[in-house]
Length: 378
Image (tube, rainbow, N blue to C red; front, side, top):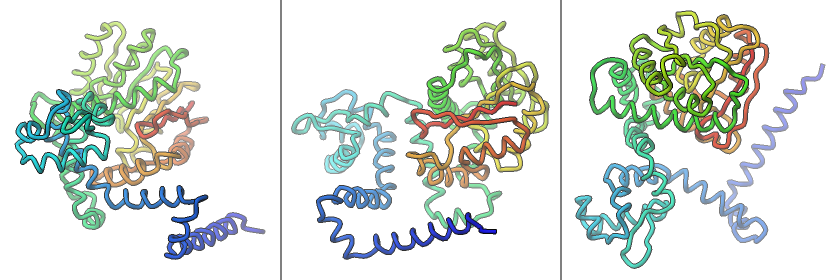
């Protein structure tokens, strides 16, 4: 019997090897850079290669602009470099170095000689405190990635700066204590849930849904967005007892207690509340390893009626146009966090099938860098 899969793999392997040999040839690079028909392609590839080399420097320019308050200062613009330097406690030469770097990344823009204002990207970042919280948060990831091979060689049970943050701040968030890390945690949750909720609202209709249960829904950020857009929905929140207590209060204050139900429990150990025709998992699966994910999906399937649906929304791997976000960024982020991995829609659908769901399908989103969506039917 002919093994067509092996034949296809062999053909593709040979083609990739020949392509790489051609691209690596200096003569080809010299020729491609000068041939009008393919010069644009060659230039794009060269720019992409340099972006791989310089990406860390770009991210540090953004970090300096946020942490140093440059974006807030430029909101008052146009403003001169000397005043910017004074307000940032920098020398004028240092301020100009940062401003020019920020200009190249569209964070800053010079409206005239020494008249600095926000650039297009800078205006987006300056208008969203939650996004700025995410940028500040990445200092932990950068610290863990200072030696990427050491990070990859470590036992994942060993703590990192990133895993310590999520363990400590997450625990505080569920209790009575408050502090800088807890505030950052809250801002991160609000910003990231807002991005995901926007993608879900733009791609999924809740017209035929009567009762929605958000599993692992924290303090109700996702349900707040969905409930506001679809006022007919009855909302259920399932999370750890101390989290649900706060989340239910937040939701009840927004929508009224008659529209909201809180369900305390552990989604790995306890049965999922019944009577809901849609269950949502928002940025949950990629935080956990395969065995716990499969157990969670099986727990949900056993708890919902035939025909009920499961909505999964989170950044996913191998999404056309957003590949680096999935496996380069989130791959290393979750490795540093010590748990989970980004999965492709095909991998998640295979796990849903194994967990007993009758069918599942991906739903296209406008900004997959924020989230992709899968809907499964029991």
